[in-house]
Image (cartoon, rainbow, N blue to C red):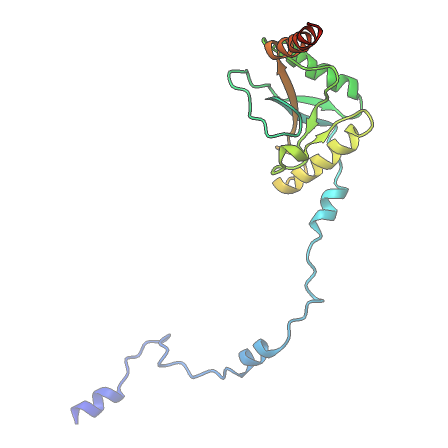
Length: 194
């Protein structure tokens, strides 16, 4: 007898699952079987918000040095001082101001030259290969810098532009290599004349 009385008695615990009446699970099953209503959930259109957000009055630019030919896989030059980021006023500064700033940095480097026919290259997104860098010209520098700023702002999820930096790359020649290249041409012609 003692076994039946102990099995039928339950302790009085107010929130015990044994004291709760069973709830019908019909509404949950019905809710799961209904197709979702996608019209009531509107997702925010993030690319549109970044394409319409106002541009900052200035861009932050970092200059990166490479030795070699543009749009090839070149490594960063060692033992060169890193350039400090500078601001580029997009309303006031022109392409010539950008080139003058780049040439000012290069003049401080010893042993390297920036050829007159070369131009700076812009890294259009964070994971772009060097072969896909965009050569900046007087015609495209404004639109390319704007598009790159918007991509970087979207990547950083920063509508205000905080932390957005544009990366310019210039490809340098060593002074000794430039002199050797011109002397090799002379030697070849000297040998051809003999």
